[in-house]
Image (cartoon, rainbow over all chains, first blue to last red; front, side, top):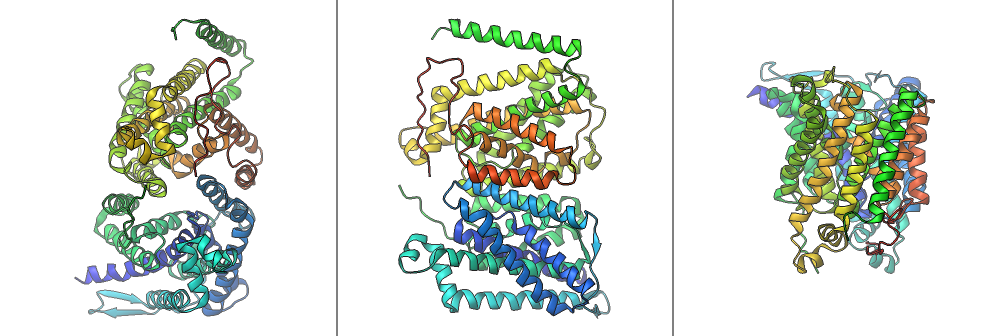
Length: 294
Length: 317
């Protein structure tokens, strides 16, 4: 029992990170139907910005989190303007390859400038271990930080999307781009805002990973990037609650699979579950089936 | 059309001449081992690109798992030639068949999915194959599979490239190929015309996987050594880039795409630090300036000039 609770705690922390990255994937997909493969690299950049701020400038956890989120959202807007906007009218496949090109570019430009080696993220959050159930379950304060920040960011996101005018415009564009434009919504601006918000969340995830796992390297984005994308599809791509559900379920599944001796197969399990879900319910767990129209 | 008309005989003579010239050049030493390495790589990439073009370009199935079929072929061939001392030609054939079987097995359930969802499912399949290979001790696991006999040479590579190109371009021109193209253009309409879309999708997938398996076999028996990570997601993307660069639905395009991207990545090896950065920039520039690919969807008309240009050149959405 205690073992399961311990694994649930670890799973929720991992799931929070997946969910934060998955939100960016799902929002971008919802707006321009692009699988933004460069999103994992924005998360990596977030971790590196956080590392630079805490190590060289000695900033605390919260200021570096916020600055890193802002830097990432600027980077996200920049990527969208430079790489995706000129290609918006071309085929999906060339957009996808462009996204992969951006992802490779960011990975290897970082390898070139900072070197491929793994770095240790400084301990900016005091990690206290709370013993529960007579010390059989360890709850690290960092687990609480990660979950807390994830929840705060998600509530903020929900507020922006549901209650503000920008959010309304985002939902309108994701439903029908042309109609939204006719209603006087600047589609370009909405796309930029979407990239900014998604990238800020990925940046936050990068800093959180830094404080939780303590190690970062320039190629760290590709693995969690793919996983978070799987999470977004699992929950129903294009849906914000879907990304959260998918992220947490994937985190929990992975930790439980590793805990019960399947750690070498945990990547395969994630993808196998994805394929099964897609076959049973192609639109994802929360997605609505769209009838085929002739 | 007769099988032995003037055009076909001329083509066969040209091909035989190329094989002989190649052999002479190898034995004289003009093609040294470095050039041969690149020729074999180009050949393998042409087979991969042309076979993926059948799936993505002609049938319109967005597959991101082509490297998985290559890896299945490579491991089949490696096991057969090293552990069972089987003749190479048998190993090549078996690699193709096993990969094709995998294609059918994965294709039947997943090909019901459309567009991006199919892409994700095939991506997942590729990752599953990689993880399974990483954890299988019989085939070396993460360490890799060593001491594979080197059988691949100029003759095998060239013959396999020619076979792939001829068989796939003939398939595309046949009524089965037209069925595949109709699925790409409009699946609902072609289903309404009585085409068994599931059958043709799985067929295209199986044929594409067959040739990818052959490419894997050539790869394994050239480089002595294979490891699961050589056939990951990035390899699938590399193949897809060749196809898109050449032009979706154009076989000469795929050949040019495979040729030029292999040459580009070989040239970039002289600057290892910035290799991937420049590669990424080149990819981006190609997509920006020539999103429809070098050849668009031009058909093979190099030798058969009389062939009527019958392919529907409508640009889908």
